[in-house]
Length: 96
Image (cartoon, rainbow, N blue to C red; front, side):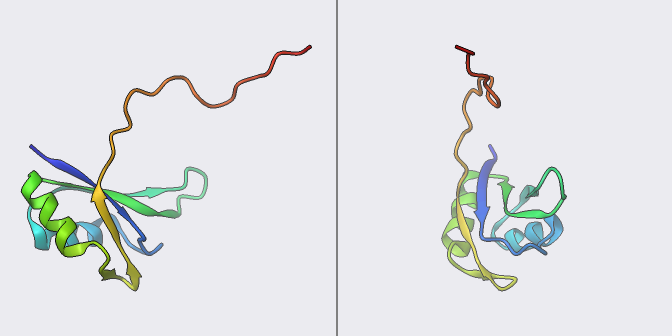
């Protein structure tokens, strides 16, 4: 079963490919994605990596957390579940 990791502190020039390659030293990477701004397309400085197993994910956390990658210190931790999302966004207040 795969395990998803949150990766923070990424350089704005980091690509999904370079992120995948960096995490491959800890095991098989199922996917790697950089989160980008919806309007500009520029990196938001964080992303997600999905490792093939929980053991490989833990190895990545142990080896890569708080280490430098492309000039920035990474935060690597297990991704939190977003849970069920409800509505959201803009809510208009009643006019009195």
